[in-house]
Length: 246
Image (cartoon, rainbow, N blue to C red; front, side, top):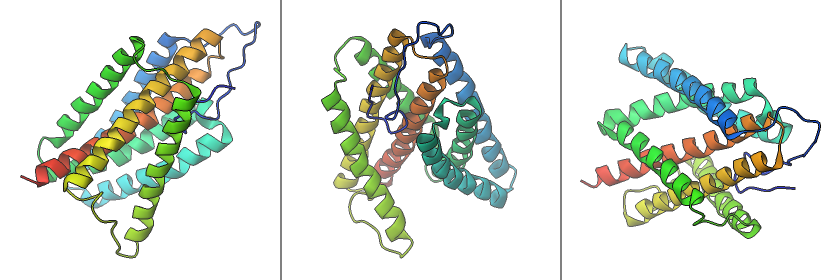
């Protein structure tokens, strides 16, 4: 059994079958990743377009639907094995696109230029971690994955507490503010996401070397999508915290 720190991938098992003709490849992951990104981008731009044309209420509604449905669909895909299904992955990408289109517009309206900064920095994190991984500077061991998953679990609990307490008008102090602790927390989360990328890369490499079925390309894309969306959102939050201090 092969484990990874990414919750979108951690239930995966590569099965080697000599009779399998269509196997997982790096090119296949890249092609499916491009298609998935285009779907997410199109959904995000549609929400942005609604904001730009004055249909603010509809844009907000679609963005909230994307957030709520995307969160539910995330858990459904993990626990039902739909992460291998192309329609499910592309649907999830569309939902995330609706959410990102709304949250990006809101952040950029408050801090002009923050969207492109967050996008460039997220791409930079991805490329940097890919280079570091290919150079063998990070050893993705079982202990690495366990520590990564544990840390992600802690952050997830904080997110859920923030959501639940927010319903009652209670805010968790410091970590969501623009002070040093809040900025440090965002940096920690982004670093966690970066290490999760290394684990994702290892998942892909291991799958290709093991001759995993081609359907696992979609599972790999799903895992990368989850990680990159997480990093991008936290990057927006970090940049907003920094700019609010000026």
